[in-house]
Amino acid sequence: MKSFSESYKAAGVDVTAGYQSVELMKQHVARTTIPGVVSGIGGFGGLFQPDLTGMKEPVLVSGTDGVGTKLRLAFLMDKHDTVGIDCVAMCVNDVVCGGAKPLFFLDYLAVGKNVPEKVATIVSGVAEGCVQAGCALVGGETAEMPGFYPEDEYDLAGFSVGIVDKGAIVDGSSMEPGDVLIGLPSSGVHSNGFSLVRKIFDVNKENLSTYVPELGATLGETLLTPTKIYVKPVLAAMAQAKVKAVSHITGGGFYENIPRMLKDGCSAKIELDKVPHLPIFDLIQKTGNIPTRDMYNTFNMGMGMCMAVAKEDVDKALNALREAGENAVVVGEIVEGDKEVVLC
Image (tube, rainbow, N blue to C red; front, top):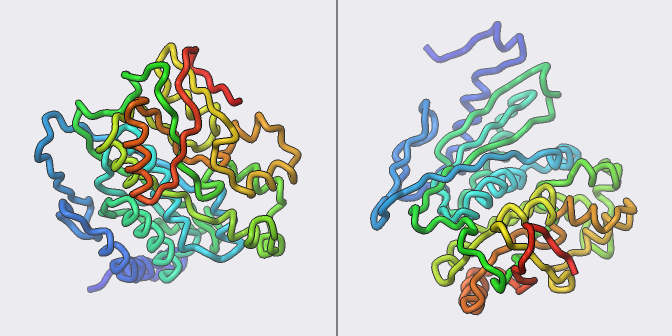
């Protein structure tokens, strides 16, 4: 007898819709299969067997995050195929900062009403993010929560686990003044600062669909652009050059995130005219009359990742990044100081 509860359905939870969602998402999950995947989705746990060949002391590195209030734009635009990329990106970009290769990902999706096609669309974005990161989507959870979320809304979060040999951990311990800072361009606002963004633009269906000449797109299209996933280019750079530290520029912008990679006695001096520039940040600052200090303390400002590299290895790192498709640039250097960010 198939699982079905008329009473539970009357309360707003349709278990059969959950089963249909799983069937629809299987094709997307299959895209993420990599060596090491032992189990498919549908079990009580996702199984993964890591390849430890050549590793002396394997260390697991984990990261977790969600998409945040950027989801409100997806609701208003009724576009749900990219927020899954954001969810994966916010996790795997953190994991790779430590030098780890992400192995697998799991997501948690809570919905007001389970519409199988919509759930599958959301998961298709998660799968695309996993493909971009080179990790497997080994499981997840879809929770139907009537009365807790409105029927057309949801929340999305997840976590990733990666692996690195202990001797290859990137933690800033070898950092010294004279090391060079390399910036990797962002794709846009990424997935943080959207409470401020939504307040500034008073976002609604009408203004999100408005074409903005300086953006070359509608406001909604620009803001909903998914977070860039940096895993493959960063790992390529680490394989070719002495990368000493990496910072993922998320909530808190430059002033909060760059100090997290700095060693005691070191500060980061960044030349703003060398930081990759995106028009969306000019529009945010102008529309909201936001002080420059607050902009750099909230947004990535066009630089989604910052790497500290040994001076003699700069060309090797830049070449590896560019061969991997990243238009990376030198944005500054490590100087003596007290873990501060100096913008000049």
